[in-house]
Structures are given as structure tokens and as C-alpha cells.
Figure 1 (tube, rainbow, N blue to C red):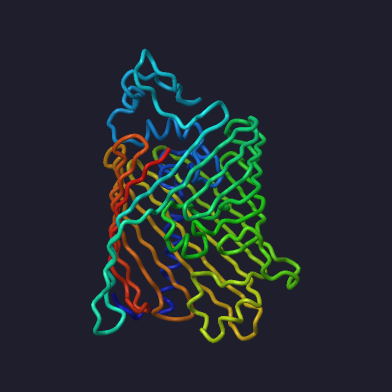
Figure 2: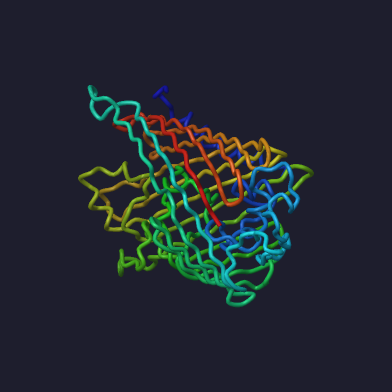
Length: 436
């Protein structure tokens, strides 16, 4: 890969990422990431969380996961019920009572108003860097099984307008929040308030945590926030704003920077607009993040801090993240585009402000229901003032949902990163995902 990229070329690629995403979304509906964009639903159609992810609601557990995900050429209810089971109502959930001694259709519902959910991902990972740590050394190959995710969810519907969610994860710690909604059922107009510890809404919330636009800019599975978030649904427009601690790593109590600034919280906002035209549907939106007087640099920019000056970061950092995203769906094809610009302004006069950006693009094709082919492209520039420090990653994915509540995924990627000691490299990840 050539290592002579000019400022003009990088600026053109940055602009092209945004403009290309907007052009693909222009004619276009309802939602993201890929399944939501394809089906024309908002994330809250299948998830309890307004920003998607985590515990599924009754429709997500009992209808979408049974009828719209598994490998099938037949979408009739009889194709996904066990023999002898009763067909669940496609709007209200599943009938879990056996029929004449036959098997019943599984549901996470324990009793009325209380349900369990889970995500388990067991992976096999193979990684081969392009070069060794020294010029004469052979690349060190990693070959290992890894428990990528193990989360248990509890969803209690305390009232038709009030929900409580607890998410306990093996690596991501926990989420615990309450959601109060003006309307009991999803509709075109609604208002919801979430309070507790959660992942706030920003850009496209992909399930792959290691993307340059997620973990790479401070939205890893461990970067949970504590605070309050308000979501407004106004027909084809959804707007969300949150006031949270703004601490990377999600500590339960934020004491960093106390008494050093008038504002030491973070404000996060996200807005999207949906449209539909015939067979085409899509979404266009933007996100904003400001954190006042933190004590850590953004992970995208941290390498740009001289080691001898790293202690100066703790004196205070004001951070900005500005994102643009789009989705587009036309028949079997679905496109996602996401770009995030990051700027850190340091209190110390020994450090200059740092700026960078990261982008993610995905194009998927449905072979048949339950079998997807996906191409991905990622690009990250940790310092737009420096040439040749970018990194790029291209991937291909085969995703199969052979039966209910089960996913098999094989991903092959190559990374170009000339500024890293080991360079880029190949990685292969295959995993089994069981969910409910």
C-alpha cells in the first residue's frame, strides 16, 4: 500500500465519505443498523433501548427473531414453530403453552411484565501481522478461542409506560436504567426519558465493538455513561439529547477534574430523518458530543501525545466528536455509512490541540433470508496534520442464521497500518452467537 497520501487526498477521502453516504440516502426510511435499515423499522421496534442494542422487546424476541432472521424461503408462522406448537400473535408476542403435549415456541417471557434475554458470542480468532516486532523477527501469529460476549438481560415492564432494564456482562460491566415513555405503544409521535447507566445514542451503533467508529473513538462496550437521555419521535424524525458524566471507561462516579471548570459533564445529541420512495428507503443523520474538562485523550488521538508530555493530559481536556451517518436500502442491497470527527483541546499550554477522524462503510447483500454477504471498509486518520499516519481495513463477512436464536459468522479482514511496529495484517474471526 502506498505511503504517500497528501493532505488534499485525505481531505477528499473525508469529504467523499460524507457526501457519498448522503447521496446514497437521498431518495430514500426507517432505521439502522442493517436489519432496521432493511426492514424499515426503528431500533426501538425490536429493542427496549431507544438507541438499539441490548435486551429485545416482545416483538423482537417473539416475532422478528423467529420469523425474519432464520434461514428460510417461507415466512409463514408454520415455518418457525416447533411441531405441535401454537402460533404466537405477531403483534403481542408468543403463546408459550404446549398444545396437546407437543413442543412450545420458546420465549424469554417469565411472567407478564418480566422477561429474560441474553447474548453469547464464542469466537475463534486467527491474527497474522505483516511483519515481526523487529526487522529480523517472524510475525507472531495468534490462534485462540475467545468469549467475545456474555450478557444477561432482565427487562421488567413496571407499568405500560415504565420499563426497568438490567444488563450484566462478562466484560462490559453492567447497564441499569429506567425508561419512561409518554405512549405505551410505539407510534409516530412519542417522548421517552431514560435515566441510569447506559450506552448513549451516537451515530450507528454497530454490534462490532472494535470498529474505528466505535471503540476507536471512545464508544467501546466499556465506555458506558451515567446520566439522563431524552428521546423524541416526531414522525420521520428522531431526536435524542443526553447529559452524562463524559468519562472514558465508564467509572461509576466521575471525580476527574472536580472544581477545575464550570462545566465538567458531557452533552450528547443525535438526530436522524427517514424517508421512503417506492422500493428505496433510508436514513440520514448527525451526532454531536462535547465533554468538558475530562482527564483522558480520545483513543483515536492518544498516540499523538509525546510520551514526555502525557502527564499534562490530566490537567484537563475538552473533547468534541461530530458525526454524520446514512443508511440506504434497495431490495436485497443495504448500505451503511458512518464518519466521526474528533478534536481534543488541552488545558496545558504544553500540548497542542489534536484532530482526527474515522469512517466505516458497509454494503450487504441478502442471498436468501438468513444468509447475508457483507463487505466493509474502515479508514482512520488520528492526526489530520500529519501525512502517512492513517490506517485502513477492508473485510468480507458471511453471516448465517441457520435456526432460531442462532448466528454463525465468518469474517476475514486485512489492515494497512504503516505507522505501527508490526504494520497491518490479516485477521480471521469465526463465531457462534446464541441470543434470546
